[in-house]
Image (cartoon, rainbow, N blue to C red; front, top):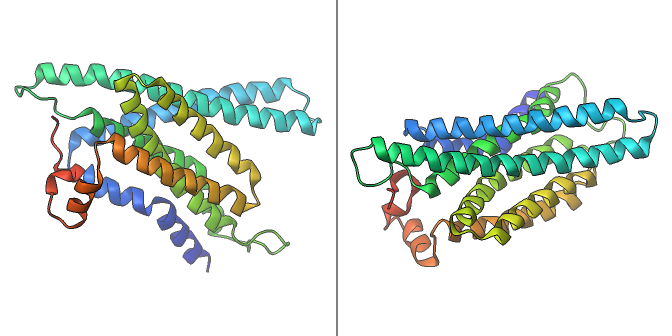
Length: 258
């Protein structure tokens, strides 16, 4: 039973992201490099926020439950703000890198478009975020022990897997919307990405009331998915052509910079 829970939750959390990686990124070495770099930027942001939180805990009153809860909320907010700051820094770095690649390239167009960079970097952020969110939970799911035996929710592993899936996809959507907003200097859209990220992160404080955290998260995921779709140049017409396999250029795997 523990093996079934482990593999089931792993495939729920990472299955769609791995499929996206295999079909749209793995065949292009340049995209793989940018994805790994995006994951590294997220990791550095986590390192900095963890360091600040650790120092704050050490100098605080550890016997005060209210103070420790406040520090936990502070850590979450700081982590989100640092992640989005590093996303902006990565956007600036990618712009410079793309200009350098264009200089070295013999073609007149950039080797990879800004929309592709947004998607790839967002998925890199999501992969690393998802791994740190659920890897310890998956390790515990192998056993020994039975979840819920002392009256706790039996949906802990399943809910964690679905939350991780949402976070990975949200990072991908946030990346697309964020980069598009920076390109067009729509700072209100950048603020919307940061605020939605803060909301989703703070919703996890509702656990173990999993319905009150998962349902709003997936509503935000749906809305951000629509926003990212249109930010990437999508429309109802080319979506219909894609679903009917009449427009192969719509697929990211066949997309060329313009």
